[in-house]
Image 1 (spheres, rainbow, N blue to C red):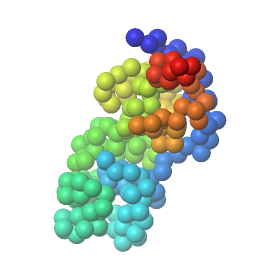
Image 2: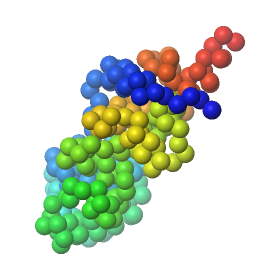
Image 3: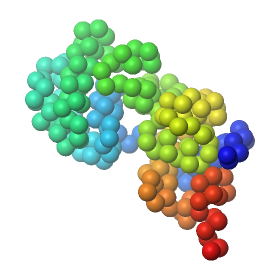
Length: 220
């Protein structure tokens, strides 16, 4: 089993990733906490690029909880169809919008506990909204964060939730939100799922995957 990274090594990794991805940020386009909430629900098993293509026009017409709660399910489905899983997402968006209108005066709550009560909102979605809309430190573990953090060896966990809590222990709280973006940027641009581009990576000396799966084969 690979040695666990020290706190010092984790900081060094994050600093190097910051150099490689100086503009790491949330790539879901939004102008409000509610728009970000809807965009994040839509992003499940869908790329941010596709979501942004859909919401670019969608949010010009509908961008409040009232707007979406007043739409029929079929109307929402038609608007978001190209995002995939559109029937399930449309139902969650309509239900969540109605709850926000009825219970929260159309405001998106800024606490993890309340966000998790909304249909379609898990820990990842809640973390994205908290960190990007409200400035609350959070590490939202999507497929990229899960893959990259475990592949490097910052953590060694089998589930997204365990990865989230392990990252919260490994990374200083003031760096949680930015680290989330760094790991996503690295996963999308360099440490890709099927074929990681180790030749373009600046943290190979720290990476468990590189040391065990790539480096031994270089000299063969």
